[in-house]
Image 1 (cartoon, rainbow, N blue to C red):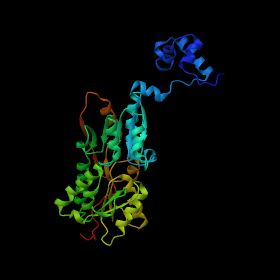
Image 2 (cartoon, rainbow, N blue to C red):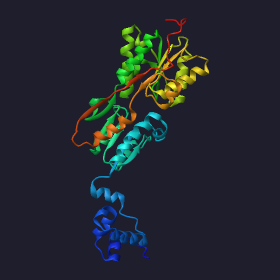
Image 3 (tube, one colour):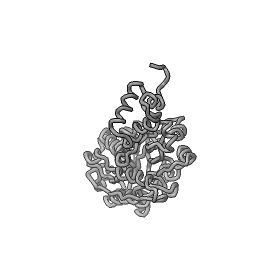
Length: 350
């Protein structure tokens, strides 16, 4: 056998057929009879030809048949964070329906721009990133279509959000109705411990900023000074993050009677911190989350249900809909009261 790498022309010459016939056997099988296609594929296997180069084929067609999903976290989050898993599943469902591939584009320090600029995709679903992230500029530089999920609707022609602010406001109103007036907030990521007032100024993530705003809209009219609401955070976004951040609040001399968490995973961590300190939930402490992941149901967590799968699916459908060059979708969210909230303890200081 020749050491030269076989090509379409090699197969065509061996079978005395045209190069187009060989190409059709790989790319357009409906153009050939089953018998002829099998002859071509058998000869290709015999000569060690694996098929057209995918990069070259992408360049010639001007499309890849794949969608990029970009998110502001390590790749492991795509497979471990319950809310992210559900959203990516929604995107994948539409990919299957449309016979598209899906490429995950995570955050990798020092390579963020490069991953975006070299990704072989036809467009991007961008999930919850900072509004000034350089990767968004890289997408715009490539002039590929994209849709933003959990972003300010003014940032792009195509956006998908849920009713974060309204649902958060309802959550805080629920706690106020139970008599709570001393609140704490738990968030993840690299946010420094600060007052909730400061966080609203510095926070880059639109969905979390909306939740903070919703809580504020409920608390201030009830006479709770927003600037006095303690906020605690810790590195990461998982349950250990909530345990560490929640512990900071529970160790304060003016321990809150209610803790609002920006996600269910963080809230579950706060429950862990309370259990470690012997703080009973909900008789001594009320805790709320946001997302309604399966573990929230098992823990009896008071939370907000948002349609994660629908959010992902809606985003990709918008991206693929050539008749909708501009659309801002706001999906509903539902407050779900459960057993981690209760009236303020009779002995608690107001």
